[in-house]
Image (cartoon, rainbow, N blue to C red; front, side, top):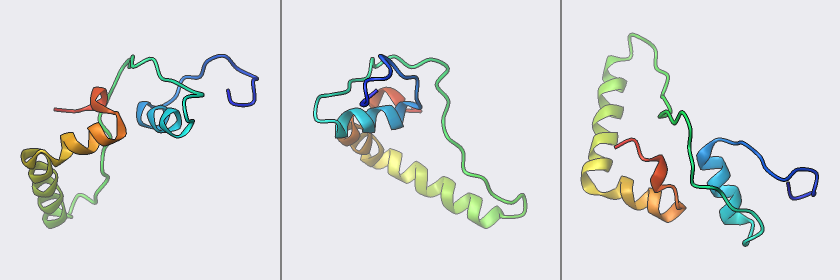
Length: 82
């Protein structure tokens, strides 16, 4: 798009949001998502301790309000999984 070869692009929402944020007003996102889905973290099936630690940590970030703050700082509130 920045090279003038396209009028629109479909991209992953966080990537598009960051590109727009860094473009100094040249790019914008529509704020429309379709088929939004949360990202995953792949772990070995036998990584029980690690699974518990990651789950608890992510939940603590959400419970503290930090998750919402991070989304707001990046302008990605529409991508929230809450």
